[in-house]
Image (cartoon, rainbow, N blue to C red; front, side):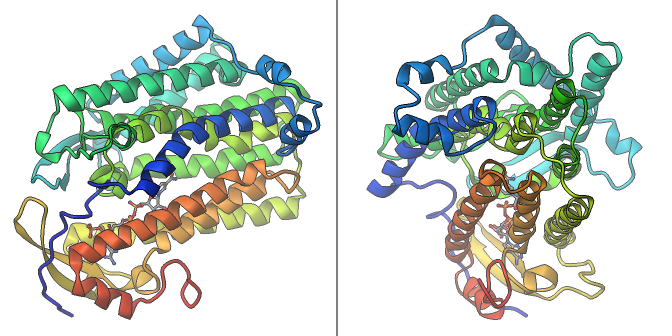
Length: 457
Ligand code: NDP
């Protein structure tokens, strides 16, 4: 199928050139609201057994005064700072290690890998070794804590509040650093984006791929300290549950397992991650710097924290059902992503559901002014709905919430957050694809009219 037309993708690539008043207002809202939300969830889990509304109601009714609330604020400790700095230094060391996993594990794509061509026409190289870094980090944590007893496996949760303060501080410092680096020492100035708003630029980032020599800020901070820590944080929560009650609930095991699979997949497919919207289009500013260092490790792990202070033992039948749902969601998410990845890498020379794939051929003018060819897959999941990878991710997110039972909203935060994030991302991505592919995108939408669920949405 071929609709060859030429479109220019420059206008809507990545963050906006001229943010509207509404956009500026919403980024200010997130800038102040997100840290408050992280603190509120921490408060509700740690001091109110995961009851979501109780702190609010208590404040409303005067049972929780401002000075008492102040008392819940975490304090700064050198120990927490040392833990955090050690973690960053350790991850930096692993980041620069050559990848030996790609030689050891068949089918795993690690080592030196090319990213997508940037709007200014650069094709950057990345050292892909996230799986190796994840493995060595988990091994190191398990051996040094459970095995050699150099520190307690509960070390993370024991410093949870103090670490919140440290990661938040460092996330903000990192945002200032990349802002000034972008202004005075940008790595690829032609890929910079500057709007009329200083705050919007600080929040969304100016540089697309800030680097210092071969150190890539976006690949490192988006993936390593936060996502690798995700697994260790969950292990620490499980150890804390055991220390408090003498047992680990099946809900905690489920959360560890489902999150663990998602994280391992992320690093197994790290070369695929180079082609995602995060790496191809998001500029590196406060949103990613603070988000990667604080929001992600604190909000993506909420189910585990909740279960530490509100242990839930699920009936076996329900636990198996949630496990099945979680695995189904993961399979869905991974299969849809894999189909597009295989299709793009092979240029269409692959099998999708056992058949040669159908696609729409298109031409577009990239932001560097050069004409390029593209293909839109209309077979497999991508022929059923336009973002079925998001649907799978949402099913998995729902299973994470269900793993922690029905007593509170807290474990379901992630599901609702992902729903908003992915719907917003879908709309944003579709407007970019429309400006990039023009008539061909219209044709794709005509052939595949639904976004997430065939026949519904
Ligand atoms: P996608 O992987 O869906 O990438 C969208 C891009 O794919 C489009 O911009 C277009 O780019 C290309 N594309 C779209 N349709 C087609 C098609 N039919 N054929 C060929 N190419 C197509 O989005 P993301 O990068 O946002 O997400 C990747 C995964 O990461 C998802 O599964 C998502 O659920 C997950 N995710 C998880 C998050 C988390 O915090 N847990 C956050 C965000 C995402 P092009 O210009 O190349 O044509």
